[in-house]
Amino acid sequence: MPSLSRRDALKSLPALAVGLAGCSALAEEDHDSPVSTAWQTKQFDPVPGAQPDGGPLLVGSRSPFNNDPMLSALDPGTGEERWTVSGRDGRGSPVAADDRFAYVFSKAEQALAVDFATGEIVWKTNVGPVDEADPGVVEFAPVPAGEQVFVPISGTEDDVPDRVEGLAKANGDTRFAHDLSASLAGAPARDGAGLVVPLLDGTLRRITADGTEDWRLDLGAAMSDVAVADGTVYVGSATEELLAVDAATGEVQWRAPLENTVFTRPLVAGDRVYVAAADYYLYALDAGSGERLWRSEAASAFTSGPVMVDDRLVTMVGGQVNQRGPSGTVPFFPDAVYVHDTAGKQVNEYRFEGYQDGGSPMWVARMGEAVYVGQERSLSRVSEEVFDDA
Image 1 (cartoon, rainbow, N blue to C red):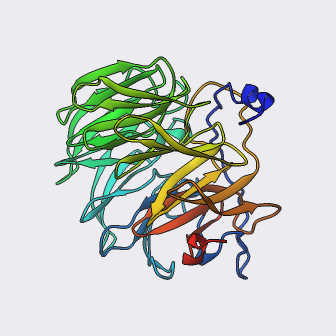
Image 2: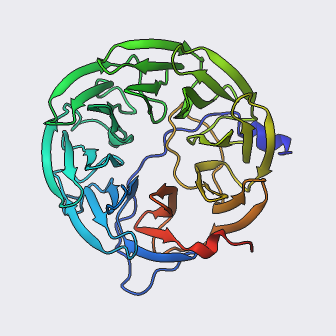
């Protein structure tokens, strides 16, 4: 069990931890990392993306510099660059993709669809005003759903109209703009042709394909990124619980107690839901009932993951905090990547200590069939040996 002093410290929500990474370039020699990597490449302030079947690895960047690419396509096997897309303002959102296009939007007030096979920009659509907003306005990825793409536009300050815009996949035409009553608390998720959004006013809402609100649920506290699977919405809350909500009606199906809030997206796999919480515990719960199956303690608050490869769960503690909420004093040290099996056994731990050529660790993500680690100045593909028992 965590100590009383640690639990007291965890009682507050953190401020949004968004800032510019250091500007120094990586040295030309090999880059050290405590995590064994298949490759590691220079990438300034990378953000997660996707790897479509048969396509390249697609990653974005929040770099503020115009000469840094906003969107890059890399060879997933080697990390070599295939093509890039830049904008007037380099800061871009995380990247989403379907079976043909990559989608991203930027501080340059543009949403783009890019043919990921060629790097050709298929369409551009203005999504202003966002140019004067804080960098957090591009915190969350576009969400392809049905015949359109939802673009979540939401800053961390009162300097931009918080909204979700629906753009036609075919040509980028604006179908609707749905005003939000508050900033997004975490990343939304697709539910069929609709979108489930968590807001800082403590409400969870579903937006339909035509831009209307289908239902809302008042949870009274900030929430995590949203996961949707098999007609159920899973979301962590600062009410110190994980909730399962019926995606069709907005009715709560069950509540599972935690010991603090959640900064990460829950992971649904089979009949289980895994949640990495700010109380230093990785949990496995029964997806149908919320019953706790096991939990495993880490050295700090989880900020990224879990993601799964085969029967391995990968998470990060420390790192970059993306969930939004009031100022607080949650400690985020040390920085480490964890590997667990699905029975809750810790397989490996990799701590980032001292100077790192690639900069401080920010996130872990699964893209395609591999796991990647984003640092301030680098992107790495995790090697297979990381998943072996120590």
